[in-house]
Amino acid sequence: MLTIVLGFATSLVYGFADFFGAIASKRIPAVIVTFVSGLSGLIFLFTLTPIFGATFGSQTLLWGVSAGIASAFAMSCLYASLAIGPISIVSPLSAVVSALVPAAVGFFIGDRFSGLGWLALGMILIAVVLVGFVPGEAVRLPSLRGILLGVGAGAGIGVVLICLDASPQNSGLGSVIMLRAVSAALLGLTMLVRRTRVRGNAQLRDSGAASQASLGGFARKLWLAAIVAGIFDSSANVFFLLASRVPGGTLTVVSVLTALYPLGTIVLARVFLKEKIALIQQLGILLALGGSALLAVA
Image (cartoon, rainbow, N blue to C red; front, top):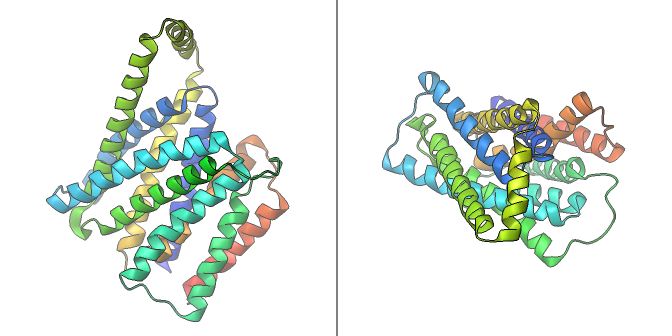
């Protein structure tokens, strides 16, 4: 039961992070938002080390660095796929793939369930699609590039979960700290490369300068949203570690529950932006709750 609660908490908090990240990205370039959130999340993790501890053995470094590289790849693919759209297809696609990849690995390493367990996991995967569906999107098929980027994003997120699960049980937050540090470093390098390219082109230099000038005028709440996104994202990483390390916390179960992260986003959108939750999303929420309850029993 504790695994279900922690796995469900992981999905909600990941969704909270996506909500605040999306708010900040409306005015601040996404790569900058991700970089700022990565740094704030890293600092937040250091404040938790007195509670959870952190060791950095060879295995911790291996899985932490691998997770950081996979995270940077996943976020790059995710933003690109959402930009191509349609979001109503690409978003659920990446979420489902992010569950299927670790679930396949979990089955390979010995995760087995009863008939009720498989039924519950199937219900949750269907709920992921329904909850992640964005009403109002024009009904059109995504391009091949959009599909590949969506699959790449989901696969990258799945690899992150696999790496965190594989990190040593006694490493505390070591693997998550390495994840955030490597991801932030790669994103910082990306920003430097982009800035160099802008300086190398006169026309882009002018537009880049105007863009940088406008950055200084952003409301503080946008930067605060980016910082909060990082704190929530790191908190979700911690919840995932706890869920995967408690007795019965299999990679398959926790990963499938984590894929429900769109739920957290639509909940905050309802609370803060007064957005209506569509009927199909309400059905997805009910199915997710029912599947989680059945999984706890199974």
